[in-house]
Image (cartoon, rainbow, N blue to C red):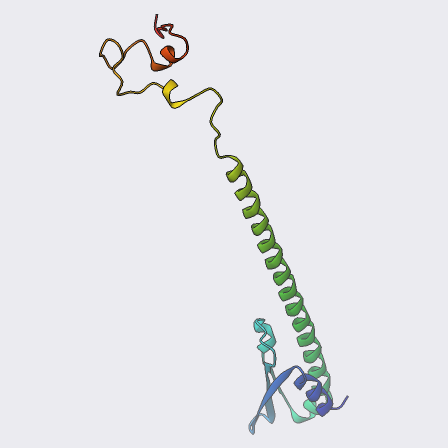
Length: 158
């Protein structure tokens, strides 16, 4: 390809700014090709400028080949950055799906874990700490359950 065909191919994926300077003393020139990606690409390597210093004869002989290599590397980086973004988007979607499933599963056991009343146990059968029993003491030996269960007396400690 010619120099302008390579520049065109490179400009297809990025807007290019070229800065060319010459040094009279050394007989060399510096060419900077600065790309600005057309797409919102978060890959900083795709904005890396190509900066070359050589004689005009060296540019005539090798500039097209260098541009081609730079363009191919940029295309490879762009493809890698795009593939990485696709993988990250897929991982984000999968993570959101798993989180939603976990939330659904966590909500189901919580609803099922609501304690049901045990059969045969009523509030009257539970001892009331304010109830002082027959003797009028807080630690009475005859709980309220004993009178409801048939009248027998039960001593827990003796």
